[in-house]
Length: 470
Length: 104
Image 1 (cartoon, chains in turn purple, red):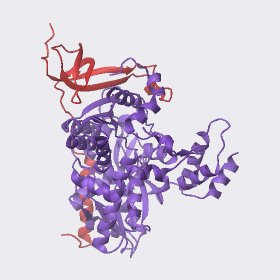
Image 2 (cartoon, helix red, strand yellow):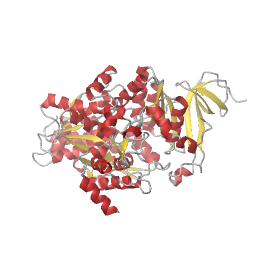
Image 3 (cartoon, helix red, strand yellow):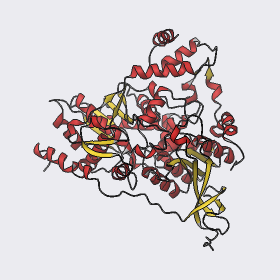
């Protein structure tokens, strides 16, 4: 390894390391003070959704079943007003080779790495994505290194991440396990520089284009099953790729009226870079610790420009509590015979509440499941929570306090969603945008257009906000 | 004398990447007070004892150095004891559907 290069030295070489390792010159797409041509960045990869489907089918990725959750729908109707209670379907992404939708994200990256003659791939991830990249790399004959944030200063591993370590190693990947902290990025850059491997970033255009097939496929499957597109698709939301890719895929299939709802587990009060809080989160992804900062400012990722830009695509953003997700995970297993998640079940908990707002004929699709197993299960998470002093009890979900008390509902009627005010998110985004400007730099028309697209608002909205601020 | 682990054994090494007090400025206080640690597994290049500085070859073919901390490290993550707060949920929701005559 490049042992001699210090933190500051490596961080100062970030732009060059990125250019070499992603094979994209992001500066080509930039204009104005902060704008960039997002659609051209995506299009220049050369992968349209049909091509992506073909590449994915070569490694048995995609074509996962769309399953109607009839018993859960019936349970919704026992608590909904008469005539309410939409049909709930789930896209069983656990059927992918490494057990989650992350195979879609990994497939185009690994395909691209091979095409560009890289000898290996590196991914910075503690989640299913590591296993997905390792699985795809194994099939492609490429070397693979996964960098994880895995244990706290007491040496206690987060059980779900320990399972991902095992899965990555099972596929022959080298796994670098780190203690808590954002300097993981420094280690990641050091590995990229040391190896010259491809950066299989979760946030590259390849990763997001790989998810488009999920939205595309589910829209067509639903049309085949019920002759309509879904009314609502709910996606568990963390870094933004899932929402972005799914929404883009839905549009490409023609499902332009389908509402896309982002759902996250509420982890407010816990700090994502805190050693103390690390093993008190009980969730490793799909939570507000990622989704809030990434929605409010996506360009905080391991590539210069994040291809996952969720605020452009979400019609609504909701949160659910930890206890509600654990409850619905148990219900999914015992009423539908599907042992999945827990992380992907965040959107299922939201669907249970949102289905009650819709009519019985309407359709909600929960767009992912993930495999479950040792460490990656509510029992493992709740045992760790208890060990760390977090109280676990039945009761009113409103009493749930992340890191202190996990409250599991007593009745299905207690499951609800809390709306995140999208206008607040837009304003926060625009604040970040203004703060990113250098001294004396001014916004041009192209920037205003870009910000309107980014916040899914209008040029007038953006201009009024800026006037208000200055 | 400490027991030697043979060359070629699957082991885990440990390194301090950033010592406590030298963490990135944006890191919260509790994390500032602990080092950034790294653990990696690979095949031992030369026979060595626990706690010695060793070289390994990882599955990606990289040669890395660090303190030998584990020999053939186990995967110890598990489920653990059933959680009483989850154990009755299935029965509760089935009872609701049964009452409506939807299931038997």
